[in-house]
Image (cartoon, rainbow, N blue to C red):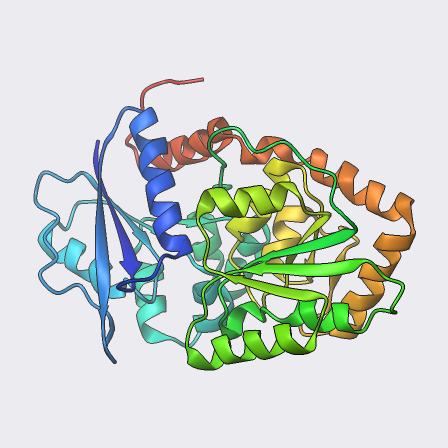
Amino acid sequence: MRISIISPRRPGASSGNDVTAARWARRFEELGHGVEIVPLTADQGEGFVARELDLGADRDLAVVIHARRCAAAVATSRAQAPDRPVVVALAGTDLYADLPDDVDARAAIDEADRLVVLQADAIERLAGFDPALAAKAHVVHQSVDGPTPERRVPDGFVVVVLAHLRDVKDPLLAARAAARLPESSTVRVVHAGAAHDDGWATAARREESDNPRYRWLGEITAAEARAWLAGATVLACTSRLEGGANVVTEAIAAGVPVVGTAIDGNRGLLGADYPALVPVGDDAALARLLARLETEPGALADLQRRIDALVDITEPAHERAGWRAVFDALGRPTRSGE
């Protein structure tokens, strides 16, 4: 097939959407398909628009990332080629903020021939709105390309946060938790991510000044992020909502235990009984969890075993198999692979 991946992009900012689009393009090419990535940029105050989007009659499939932000692209693809299938990949905000009330998101989701979600709990979320939505949804776990850096023994208990500073990520929760720990604790938080605006940059600098356990690196490269992850005791994913965070997948691939918030996006990847998830926004609970992991080696070892058992879902072959099932369901079987 000739596939267009349509992804929202904010000028001058890297995002998980960009990472996902590039990775899926590689997976599709490995399955024998031709791929182009079509970025949709945001006009100030207007959201993401499909102005002048032309996929061309030679495109066999449109894969749209983010229902609400790219709703216009779904409609445009239908208008240009009514018989061309559209697959919509749902973001965390689609699932846990926009549904059921956002008209644009729901229109794109209803119009899609197939839906892609990143973890199993999202299927139950869709079923709660409409069983027909769950029936056309597929779980495609995110994979991690290339070898991961070898784990390093950290100096003390190092919590790594890989998240841009914006409200939905609650990016300073780990810092606030660390500040609650006793003076004897070796816990420190290393945080990499760009500030969404000047207010967040100011907040991070203030936290760094007031909290000796916290260090903010700003935006770093993917290679640098993996290097920091390799030296982490744990990764913290403290978001208020996630569709299925790529950083959690990266941590699983690297063999790094995860702590975080008890949201569907984390439970759906780590397991319903994963013991290192705390209520959203609860820095006191996170502080107690970090203290226990620091002082009880058996608790940290249990997390390590659980993470090691999940590594297969991060393999590119697993992601290819997920997409192969989507294509087959559309009646467009791909070439046989592994």
